[in-house]
Amino acid sequence: MKVIKFGGTSLGSPERMKKVAELVSKEEAIVVLSAISGTTNSLTEIAQLLYKNERNTAKQKITELQASYVIFIDNLLQEKAQQTKAIDLVSSHFSHIDSFTEDLFTVHEEKMILAQGELLSTALFQLHLEELGIQSCLLSALDFMRIDKDLEPDSFYIKHNLERELKQCESKLYITQGYICRNVFGEIDNLKRGGSDYSASLIGAAIQATEIEIWTDIDGMHNNDPRVVDKTFSIEQLSYNEAAELAYFGAKILHPASVYPAQLSEIPIWLKNTMEPTKLGTKIAKTVDDREFTAIAAKDGITAIKIKSGRMLLAYGFLRKIFDIFERYKTPIDVITTSEVAVSITIDDNSNLDAIQEELRYLGEVEVNKNLSIVCVVGNFSHDSMGAGNKIFESIKHIPIRMVSYGGSQHNVSIVIETEYKKEALVSLNNGLFNQN
Ligand code: ASP
Ligand code: MG
Image (cartoon, rainbow, N blue to C red; front, side, top):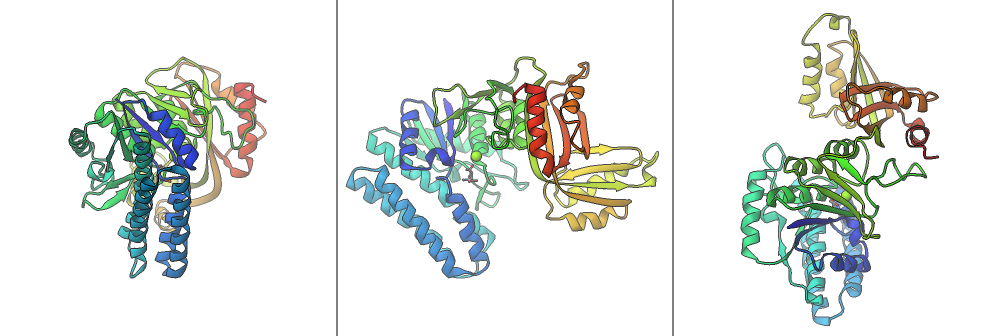
């Protein structure tokens, strides 16, 4: 059995949702759906308004969103009875959302609001399948998807509960929600923005799927950022490691966490394009052809922190003290470079920056630079290979470099630059490494 996941843009209009139904109609699969595009953003806005106690504006947004669903249904479904079912369903979800506008708004309520997007898209999709006479079972992800006390997916729980749910409803085709889950207390929670890919991969691993397909609006992973660079091409094959690096360092097509569960079970992931389903897309698997350069990605909003201290010279335990501070503030570190007297670290989450800086000052002189980007070149740079570094730096010799990390893995060279030079860097690397200009 396959797992097939469709993102919000693939469901963005009734026509697209119909196309998705066509694509899966003959499959034996669990279909994982995101919310219809724009919905999670609107629900987030509604929650933000409720936190600020702007109830009337929130109510207005809720009414607007509900109205857009009514129009959607009108174009998705033909039969009157089916339309009435859909309208009732939408009304019940929106009155649930509306019920949170009455009193003090909590984080828990925000999560319940955010869950409505996927609950709506999957239910409407099933009503459409029903109308087409295609039998399917709608599984609630809230009955099997779960995160533990560290907010990590509980694979054991997911596997056992999903197996039970699958047994309870025999079908070739299952539909379920991406993104949403329950937490360790059994409350409604989610896998964070873009988390539907992660759901698909976790489900794939739980059922030992033959493959996991992630359908979006682009024909696979490209060799460079198509939003920034004109001439990019789709990559036929990627290794799990390459895909994880690219997804983490900015390739928006895939949620970075979604690679690992598939990798553990060696399940191939296919990245496919709903708009052009006949195109091959990208296959992510264990091994790929040996090639020097695979792709370039970039991640913005990076802050570099340099800690300089004479005490670091010949000392041990210094790095541990630094890492300890970042760990306590739950702030992940991306790139790190060291010299004998200084350490530079990058982070992409500044929410605890002031407190971190305050504590780092006890260890040495601290310097912070914001508005940086990490440009990440992914490929195969084994420890006995030569020349890749030269080609990279030759391509961007006119761009000032803040940090470089080479050799951390055999698949990644990370270069930290000021964001204002990002476009130039991506274009020059496209030219220098892929001959695309
Ligand atoms: N609907 C959620 C979001 O917009 C999850 C997803 O689409 O992957 O972030
Ligand atoms: Mg996505």
